[in-house]
Image (cartoon, rainbow over all chains, first blue to last red; front, top):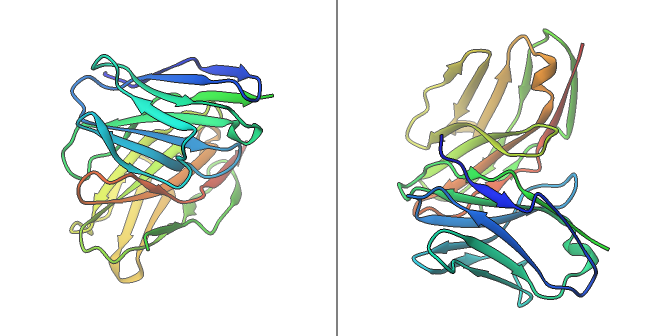
Length: 114
Length: 114
C-alpha cells in the first residue's frame, strides 16, 4: 500500500541551526501539508502546498519556515534558525485531490532543538 | 470559526468495557468532512474513518462504531469490548470543501487496562 515517508525519523539540532525535514508524498497525490505536534498537544496545521505553490499557511508558519518541492517527488520543510520552541513532531501529509478525502500522514520527524 | 472540541482529555477503562469518545464541531459551512485518527504510542497518525456532512448514517466496523448527529454537531466514536491495543490518543478532525487543511481537536488519551 502506498505511504508517505519522512526522513529523518529523529533529528537533534542546536538552537540557531537550519534544519530540513524531508517527505516523499504518495505519488499521484496533489495536495501536500506540514503539521506540527508539540509533545502531548494537538496536531497543528503549518502549511499546505498545491500546484507548486503555497495554498494556505497558518500564523505559525512565519518567515523562518519555507517549503519546497524541488524535484517533483520530495516535499521539504526548512526551518532557517531553529528555536527551542520548534521542538516538536513534524508530520507531512498528502491527499489525492478529490474533495473531502482523508489526509495520509507520514510517520513523523521528531525534532529536538537543544 | 471552525473548531473541534474533544472535551475528554483522558479516559481509562478496564479491558472489555465499552467506551465512547466525544467530538463536537463548529462550522458555518454546509459542506464539511469529519475524520477520526488514532495515534498509538509509536506516534504515527492512523486514519480510521471519514464522514461527509450529507451522510448521517452511523457506521460500524468491527468493534468500532461512529455516531454522527448534525442536530448536536457531534461525531462520537465508540469502541466496544475495548482491548489493550486500543490504548492511544484519538483525534477528531474537520475539513471543508476544496481540500482545505484538517482542523484537529486536542485529542483524547485512552488507556485500556488489562
